[in-house]
Length: 112
Length: 108
Picture 1 (cartoon, rainbow over the protein chains, first blue to last red):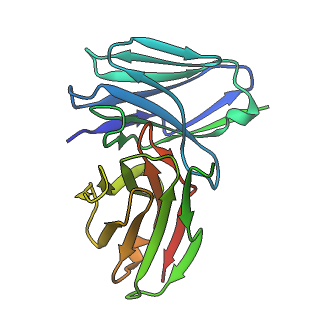
Picture 2 (picture 1 turned 90 degrees about the vertical axis):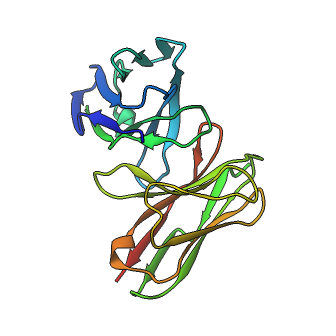
């Protein structure tokens, strides 16, 4: 089955700096890669996703890149703000709406 | 529009007790999922239902049963709770997986 590894497990950045989280996956059939943000006491919330026919996708301060050859994808947050502090999860599946395999999560702390 | 609603939000059980976690979605999604979240281990799939009337095992199904009651509702049952089942349980529905806010379950 699919295996998703996520690094780093914790990330501390200064407000205004950029944050990068990286994930690798094992199943070459995976073609849907969402990212979730989880705030304390809440369920994960989808913040951005990318499909395998696209190499990069941006949404304001958030961007995701995908390298299918190397089987890795990354989340980039620019101009970080204190409200970006949360746990972020990457995931992979063979198609949107199908079973997801999650990475272990990254706890991001943005220091004012 | 409530999205995915889970009940209860918190529960404490004694070893050996049984319990059903409830989940309902109002987005007309076909697929629904149950995950457990443990510290440092991300979310692991327990069971899922691709459509009304079907259920399948996920990564960690042992000790659990599920029922897809109708298109809206998907319940998770612990027949004989064990301390290893202490966790936060999340229900999700398809699309890009809309999650509920979880049930925090402690088993003593």
